[in-house]
Amino acid sequence: EVQLVESGGGLVQPGGSLRLSCTASGFTFSSFSMNWVRQAPGKGLEWVSYITSGSSTINYADSVKGRFTISRDNAKKSLYLQMNSLRDEDTAVYYCARRTGAPPYFDYWGQGTLVTVSS
Amino acid sequence: EIVLTQSPGTLSLSPGERATLSCRASQSVSSSSLAWYQQKPGQAPRLLIYGASSRATGIPDRFSGSGSGTDFTLTIGRLEPEDFAVYYCQQYGSSPPRYTFGQGTKLEIK
Picture 1 (cartoon, rainbow over the protein chains, first blue to last red):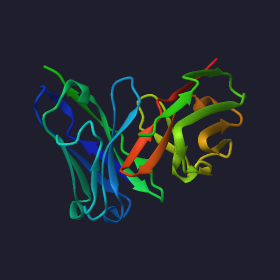
Picture 2: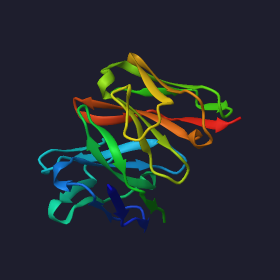
Picture 3: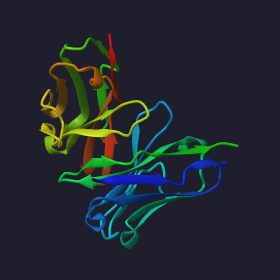
């Protein structure tokens, strides 16, 4: 069974940093591109970033470019999101999602981790 | 940048009725790049449809997708109580690579 489990969320002050993790099981993690998608409270879904299986290609949404860094460790079956210079508007549930298909879509999602940016 | 507009914002129907949800793109997109997701309160989104019309694994056949160009539709043939949720369309664009979601349609029990 495919499972994605996020962790690392919490309360952080504006301007602060946080690192999210996503641990995968039930599939060959090193064969799949992975993504972060977020959802502000009561709002819709917003794609944040993606990374290919071997980390050769990385992309970010304009709203986080220069502040967030996606990475992965295939040996640990883990995906990461380093978030710096956090703003109030970064408050959201952050989901990791597996990418598949061509053109790609998200076939499995974690349960999400809540990041709250507030003073 | 492509914008996806979903309508209606809220759809009120009764179990057993047929639901038709719309997703309109601001410019023509490849139908193979269009997906639909279902999200229930407190849960992660779940993939329903990819490639505009292909059902994901385990999705009941009362869910169907159609459309091309700028207009796409998710149809739920006969609503079950567990179908009441928020539905999102999503499009993948390759230049630059990015994913765009519609704002969602809330399907509520009438």
